[in-house]
Image (cartoon, rainbow, N blue to C red; front, side, top):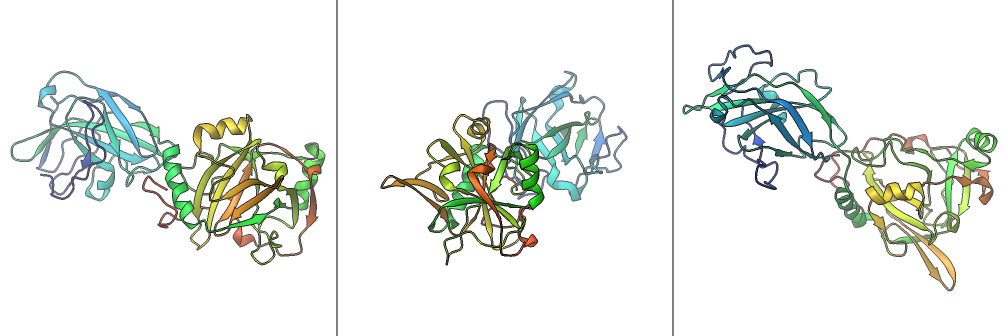
Length: 376
């Protein structure tokens, strides 16, 4: 018998044939492992006549939903009243169990024409590998179930955040961005050996590299977009870049107009924090028509260069003027190589504050300021 209060919908029917899944209360029910043995629980029994799902297909995968479809033999098909779906993260070593403690990954659906949509941010995370198996069941008049054997186990991986999800992050970031401060240069700190290597092996040009996995787990740019990280934040009292940096004692500075101008497209990439009061916004600058621009155009919300809450480029009296948000730390990715001759490299006078590094930083999943309801 299903306990009251556990009927939260995972999705609304989008079309005939799709089902609405709900959490399954397992108080009176305990299923055996997928080995075909009889259950020891008197509330449920194996029934060989019920068809076993096979040829399972997963489609329409998003960061927090998917569609599932399978084939079944026609015998006793009319007796099926429910489907049991066993969904587990791939690394879970006990994925073959159907126990009360694993309720969040065990789902039940009424038997309706397939496919059905499984949606639920409280048990599906973006960019995560899962295993799934299906069992058919027949609910008896006394509330007990007769069940088939489990299907084969298949694997799939959920998707990245879509533009819709990133727009939700963008809107949350706008709330805390603060007023805009004027700046004039982008800068990048590294060790002296880094700049020497770029001069010697890459023709005096900084080269894009694949972005690390820092920030939101569902960000579509992590591990995929190639670019060069720059900063533009300034000290409130001086209007200049800070003298401290977590990334190295040597700094490349370049005039803002060299990287950010009307021939550049600007995109919102991420919003996150690292268990601190500081919040970070990742923006992407891509020269119009470049490979980076095409990548971002398909995946990221585009920002108006002159009118957004984070980074602007406007013309005043024939001169380009630049502003950045005061209350978030901007991490700006430029997607093309940058010639060192366009700027200067010099040693900073401050300290190398390693504790402030965001390299491969994990996002705080509990922060209400920078999380949305589709995973972290």
